[in-house]
Amino acid sequence: MDTTVEANTPQQEAEPVKGGIVAYLQVDGAMKAADFYKRALDATFAGAHPPDDQGRTMHVHLYINGGSLMLCDPYPDYGYPLEKPQAFTVMLPVEGIDTWWKRAVDAGMEVVTELQVMFWGDRYGQLRDPFGVLWAMNEPVTS
Image 1 (spheres, rainbow, N blue to C red):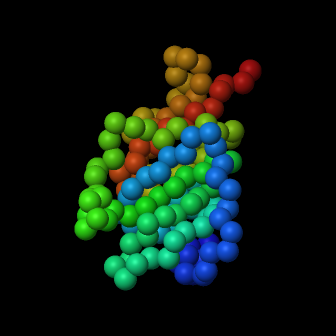
Image 2 (spheres, one colour):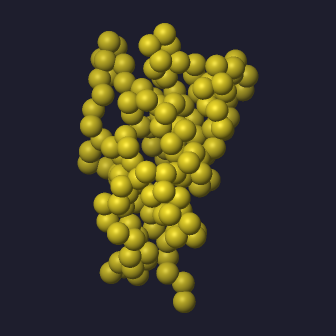
């Protein structure tokens, strides 16, 4: 997926947003994050606004694990400076957690909480991506 090329093509019809609630993350390098999430989380590119003359993108739409994720770059000159991600975790409930975990770690996510069976009975772990976003993966343990 070369999102740079795709983002520079005229947008015809917007792809549908998937999910009852959608995270919209501000990151330093939205198109770079989209490429990283493709490698780390098997994201597919749904669309984006073309970058401005400073290389910033005001909107990127990805699909991850059946849901939508939105990204944008900071625009301090319009009152939206970059802020360090804090006080939230993006939860990714998955099937085949070992595959998801390995792909994410191999792509460069940092392990914060080792993947393990937790007291509530599910396999769970936390990872931090290079953009500072904390991700949690969870899969019920089946007998």
